Image 1 (cartoon, helix red, strand yellow):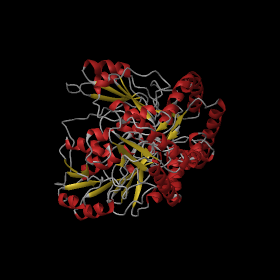
Image 2 (cartoon, rainbow over the protein chains, first blue to last red):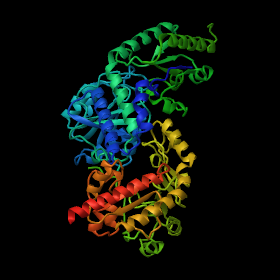
Image 3 (cartoon, one colour):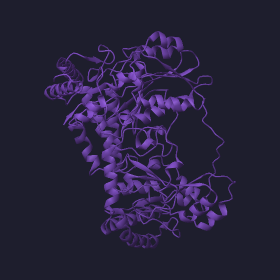
Length: 372
Length: 265
């Protein structure tokens, strides 16, 4: 089995699994208990918090752990709109955002918010002039992701954040795919990150909040996380996230160089006839979203059961709907259905990637009646 | 300021300090007509008091309303009540923290919004924790410990009473896994520190609020006199709790009480 679906989730780093072990096994205390075992667990969570904060690398804020990035994004959007000053009830976002942002915006729209969804070009990128044109004192929030989960393109988040600040709006950056891969630019007020995309465990994520930009709570209850996010915290998951974040920060350059090599090797192995979806320059190159005229991508995936890759996003892969991202960059439904996403990273070897790409290429050509 | 408000109204009912009996519930159910959501905890997390949810469920249903039961402390230990919605947590029955579930009698009660969990809960599923939760429940470790804990605890409580302690809601039906005891004259915070130094982990109120040292909202709602509430601690048990553990706890309880008495003298 060759795993090429790094945007869906990533293999857990051995260091992260090791950091989790004591908290899964012997050290089970509730971190909010005042006993010494509880305080040990609370201390482990604080260590992890520092590790994730340092990997994010922004100053002037702090983070709260959540159960998923979806929760962090729901919280950021709903909690900011709830707190927004009178007259600010508009959200500006992008047509190619993750479903966690777009569907939450749809929900908010049904409750009286206005939503502006900016278009992207064929390269998948927004035009800053479009952002500038829609920002005014009615905008409460601007939500733009740093690295796209389907096509890997990098939005100019730093510039958007500057414009958002000038307009008095809160800037949310979905940095789930970016953490550990692309430096998170200064300027965002809220940043959502997830452990399982950076070789940490599933079931834990975080929202980084600039001081003063904390959204109203989404979850109410025991008052954990300074009253901002109730619910017993999971020391094991936090410790795993912290270890993964530390590793991502330490290996930032090394991982990036490895991904560049993998990208070049994969492209070199593809025969003519493939097109890369979205910008190849402003891109996290661990994402190779490609299409081929006339290819039945679903059949290709079915025929290569021992290579794990996907159509658009993992969430949408089961649904059979064409990807909203590929449509946003101007692809027809047929072109979207002839696209596949290959995702690779730290634990992908060049050899296995080249072997898998070779087989994908051969199978695609065979499907179209061409000699392999 | 955005508002998501609909014409919702919430009502809180008061608890008598002995716990709760179904007759109290009956006399309190003069809520306004029209279907609503009644949210009640099965087992109180600070006192172990079991609410008569099956009786409540009947009345809720005949009023055309839905019953949401918080069974975080009861699931995997006691039979689940006849509720429409039941919330449970993995880490209260030996599973991992950071994982819970909502049991829904009729899925049509909820409106799907798309995404994972058949469109009812978005976010990548946490498979290792799901497997841990399932294994913890299937082991029946807590469920099978309940008869033994019932006996162990009744011996403990006899000793507590014999040593001038007070059992909170002693008369109410209580889960054998949770109890609250007051040691008159010794502040909860002082007891916690002394138990902790002796290597015994107990708490004052719930863990979430234990650090805060505010008076327990639960004991306050029960109308417990502040002099008693401020001296209460929560003691809870599980399948690993042994007779020796309980003996050690009792010995420490006596020591703390004797030290306080010596200081007072």
